[in-house]
Length: 335
Image 1 (spheres, rainbow, N blue to C red):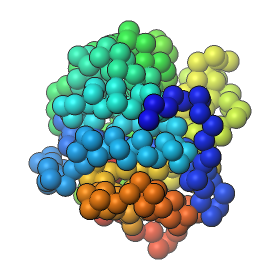
Image 2: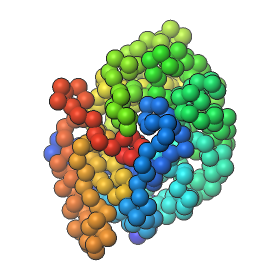
Image 3: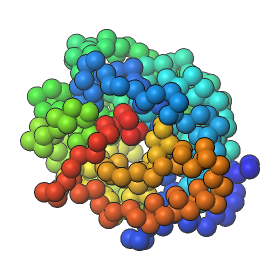
């Protein structure tokens, strides 16, 4: 199969009972990470998935390419930290002819890998950075690696992985005083900044709504220093965007908790151990690894995927009193 985005007319079979057509797949390459962010996992890390449970590279490529025949045309590689996977460049090269490929990374090794990823067919990159202060970065991630993140941002920009997007989570009393500085940094660097509300996806299950910095608070802080004008035409994008001081530069805010966008969600997730998730906050998964290893045909695997999508819930339910945090943490799900 040698499909290129936009060259083949595909019938999207991944339409749920609420009329949402799914075209974006987040694929976790590993649950391992090189940082220990306080809002994600404990200092000692987590029990990693056993190697035999992980999808092999041929299995992963097979499943992703199968989804492209069902309607997926964008794939984002995630983790954990996806660039820890030794053959990440080969995976990009094997998928780049079928879908538009991007990656979400902490940026620590991007300085070394950005040119090779670009040459393999990667188009875009999202880099996580929650602070510009070295002491604070060390405290928040339990690693003294901020210079590596800065180097990764520079390398991604030079490699032409545009647009380079920065993802920032503000935490009350920790880094919420840096909103304006972070946006100024992004504007000066020529990259796009997106603030993300902290979500109940930490391994410690310590998330508290009262400690979350809301989208409204973020916008209020930014409005003290900039003039923000809404950008029309959000579509299925998770981020609401605003022009900064008249544009063309923009800033985004992903208000998953206080401004849910479930009604337009077009995303699915494949975990590193081969489980299909229809929502970041789902408490159920569809096993694709088991049937694949047992010899299931592509038609049988496709039917499993289509059936899973049909059962997708209308929303994540965070604001429902009965909401329960999913048993997997973000690093094990894949962002």
